[in-house]
Length: 244
Image (cartoon, rainbow, N blue to C red):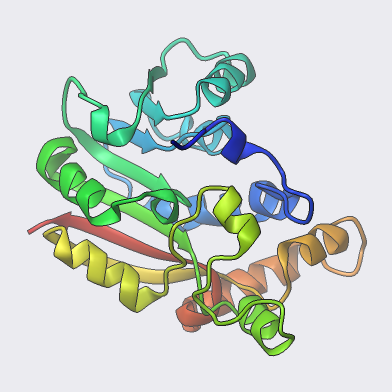
């Protein structure tokens, strides 16, 4: 039996989320998403403590969040203090939603799911409007930082799930080919694919750098733009899917 509150906790050698995630990756996820957003409703699956939800508020008035951790939902409610956001504290497979949604957000969530294809199929069949878009972002198995860790002997292979990742609820480490495979198996049509942020350093190394003047906003923007040229060498990979 999984404890979704415990999976949010830091481990001895690994944080659940880093400043790099909140300050850099969340910003560039929105930058990658926003030109593809369509007017209407938004469903965020796996909203956690509301950090990414906050970035969605300027773009949508109608936001629904589904999150398995009751503790995370309470933190989100107190953090955002937005009475217009609708919350469901439920496992995805048990969730019954009142309508379909124009934009569905799945950021760093699919790798936590025991049956990812089943979830994607449910999104396709039950929750996505006919003209809606599903935004999927997952950590990238082929990120240079991860490939370096393999060469250092820290992990066995690019797509390995480490002990700390497993404690955080990870079930798979996706690359573009395996992510596209699961989207297609679910009956989705892949309309757009890219990578988000070229990344040769581990998150804890980025956290240390962000506290210095070694890098600046121009450097971060350069890494983001370079990632669009080399999606397979990015921190995260991204698909935008629609119904067939």
